[in-house]
Every structure is written in C-alpha cells, then in structure tokens.
Amino acid sequence: MLIYCFLVKNCDIKKNYILKNIPFYVTGAITYFLSLYNFFILGSRVNGFLIYEIISLVALLLYDYEPLLFFVFNIFPFCFMLPTIYNDFGLSTIADILVLNTMIVIFSFHKRKIVKKNYVLLNKQKHNIKVITFGNFTILYNQSVVKFQRKKSLELLAYLVYKKGTSVDSKELMCALWGERATSTVYGSSLRNLIVDIKQSLNKLNIMDFFIAEYNSFRINPSVIDCDYYNYLDGLRDKNNVFSGEFMNQYSWAEGTAAYLESL
Image (cartoon, rainbow, N blue to C red; front, side):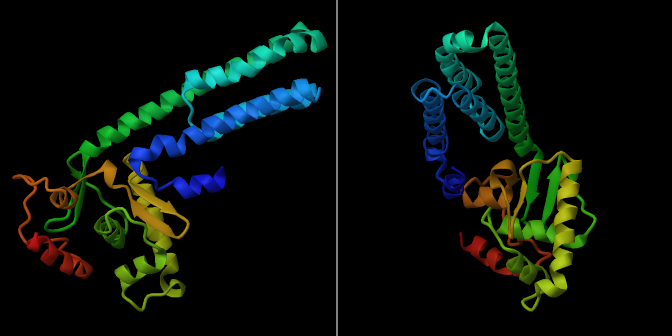
C-alpha cells in the first residue's frame, strides 16, 4: 500500500476518490476477514483478535476514514467474536475491549474534526494569500507583505510560483538563484538555510500547504493561493488582473515569460 501511495499521489483530481480511497477500504475489509479467519477457522483466538485490533489502530493512525464507516468496520468483526470471547475469556475481557474500541472510535471522530477544520482554513487561506507577479514579485497575507529573513527566500518562492506547482530539484533551484555554475558543494548549505527560513516564516503566519518540501523536491501548491499569473493563464482577466508587460521584474530568469504573456 505504501508503494501504491507513491504511484497514485499525483492522480487526476476527478479520479482521486476511486484511486486513493476505495483500495484502502477493500484492504481494510480483507484484513478484518483475515482476523475472523484466524479467530474461527484456525482457532487462533489471540492472533485473530490481535490482527483485528492492530489493523484498526494502523488504519486510524495512517489513513483518513469516514468515522461512521470506520465504526462499522470496527464493530463488524467484534460482533462475530463476542460470544466466543465471552465463553473463553469472560465478561471482564469484553468490557476491556469495549473501552479500547470506544476510545478508537472517539479518536476517529476527533481526527475527522481536525481534518475538516484544516480544510476550512485552507479554503479561507486562498482568499487571504495573494501572490502578485505582474510587476515586482510580492506575497500578501491578509493585505500585509510576507517578509523573510533572507532575501533569496522570496526569489526561491518566486521561481516555484513561476513553475506553476511542478516539482523542482535542488540543482535547478541553485542554478536559478546563483547561476548555472552553482554547485551543492558551495551553495548546498545556503539553499538549506533558505528552506528553513521559508518554513519558519510561513509557520509564524499559520500558512499551511503552500510551500511543499520533500526529499530533493520542492514545489508550491497553486490551489491555496490567489495568483494574478495563474488567473491570467486561465483567462480570468478583469480590472484587478491586468498585465502591463512586466513580470517578476526583480529576476532575470523571468524575462522570457513577460514576452510570452504579451503574446496572449
């Protein structure tokens, strides 16, 4: 499933639910049936019960299930096991299991509440983060300019905005920021300092899911910002989104894009 996650992480948004959720529901159901197989067919009561509890905890910690669906998956094997557990281990064991499973289900509802809260914040954030590329590159959050400790931090974000959400490796970033001869030996630590500066500055403002840094891969998430460049390319042109021939004036690598935008 981990390998599968890597394979489908960039899937089409229209296929997102089918490709990303349904396989996990199927896997969860198969594993629960496996616990019942161990419990009843093989007669291994402890193994079957442990598989059932462990898969519930793993699913809860790693994946985002609908709480009600998770509750059904959680209670279904237990109902089958209940009479046998009572005969073999007694009422006190059932009480312990009920307490544990109740805590698991409550945590699943709490987790979903946090996910929904973050989703609302992200939607609200899109209206609060305005990225200006026509003229000098500027990032506004709640109508205030976002500032960084290091001058190159802003240029790094500008380059990622220019790349429109595609992933960029460290070598390409160093070439854009310090020239084609830049190497990781000389500028590697400087790049790492810029990344730390960006993360800290955005975290202070509670800006989420905008700058994404993975292993030797950096990008921005276009869906959480309001950007004049992206709006212009999408044909959303109005009095607040007028291109006057200037695009990220501070940076030489952006000069070619101004000519392209003029041709549109």
